[in-house]
Length: 224
Image (cartoon, rainbow, N blue to C red; front, side):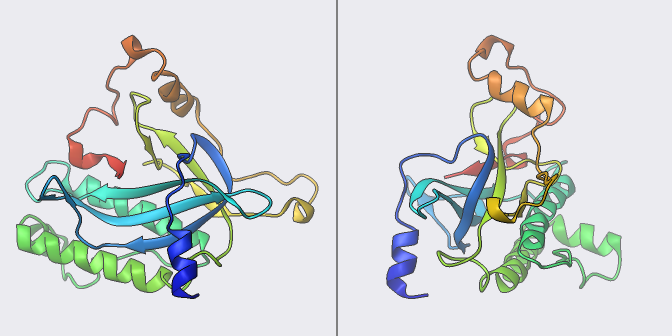
C-alpha cells in the first residue's frame, strides 16, 4: 500500500456511516496518537476509521470510532475495560484472528491486576499494552486494499450518537451476493431495544436512561 493510497483512504467522507447493518465496509486505518481539542488532550484511545463503499468501490460514508479512557478511580473501571477488550476482540475475530485480546497475561493474580489498574500509572501502562497488542494483530490486515466486512452500527440510549454495540457481536466478514449460498443469513441483527433507542432521537421526551445508559461518560463509546 502506497502513501498516496493511505492518504486517499483517510480523506473524509461527509456522509456519516448510518444506523443499521452496513455492508461493504473496510477499516482503512487505526491509530492511537494523542489528539487535542481546544488545546486539551482528548481522553480517548484506539481510533478506528471505518469506510463504507458502493458496488463501484467508491466511498459513500465513514465513521471514526474511539473509546473513552477508563478512569482508574471509577466504579465502572473493570466493566469499561472488559467492554473495550470484548469489542476489539470481535474486530480481530472478523479478520481471522481467533484468540482473545488479552493484556492481562502478565499478572499473577486478580488482586495484583486490580491493584495495578487502580493507579493512574498502572492503568496507563495497561491501556498502552492493549493498543500495542491490538495494533500488532491487525495492522497488516486493514487498509484501503483490505477485505470487506459488514458492520452493525447503533445509537446511544437517547438515539443521539452513533456507536458500536457494547453487547453482542457487531462485525462479520462480507460475502459477495454471488457467493451467498441458499439460505444464507447474516449473523448480525438489530434488537428491538436498539431500534427503540434510535427512535428516541425523534421522540426526545421519551429518552430516559436505561440500565446501560445511566453511567458516567467513560462508559460510553464515541466517535470524533
